[in-house]
Image 1 (tube, rainbow, N blue to C red):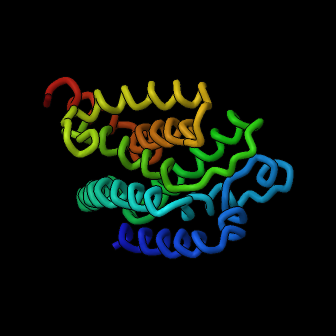
Image 2: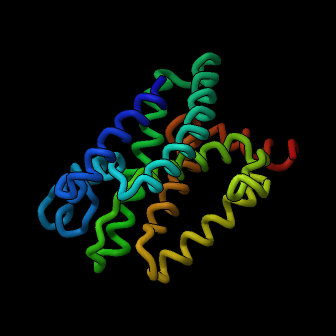
Length: 207
């Protein structure tokens, strides 16, 4: 399964980087290296490296949960003839979300030299794609408080944008914000624009 394969690759790269800090900095997303040195590969490589065990475990747990859900959704769309190559669509959603998140993050925080690492942008894309397909599905805050995905998603976008503008911590909130937006628009832009009607139907008539 593609979800497991990506988790294994991410875990191997991240664990290697825990003891080889030079590897982390070689793969991390930084404005100077990407823009000035043209090391474009970092827009992709930063997705597979994490700064700590906690960072890695949280991202991979969320990735597994929502990755399996989206993989199943894409398989269903494949079976009814809406998409071809569901695994490629999954990669385009996940990796595209991470790359888009990283790109916008660089543009908005160019004055900061703190390296950005992690799969959070791609994971946010998966979460918001799930919200697109089933906006009233219950998501859990800290695994305890259930809220409809659409409500939690809107709150998350406001929070991420606000915290990104403040810029008072080392979390790349802008990456979360733009990864989430990418994931939400992906189905109706990259798959079929008519899926917007599926979302609206789910939002207004199936809650």
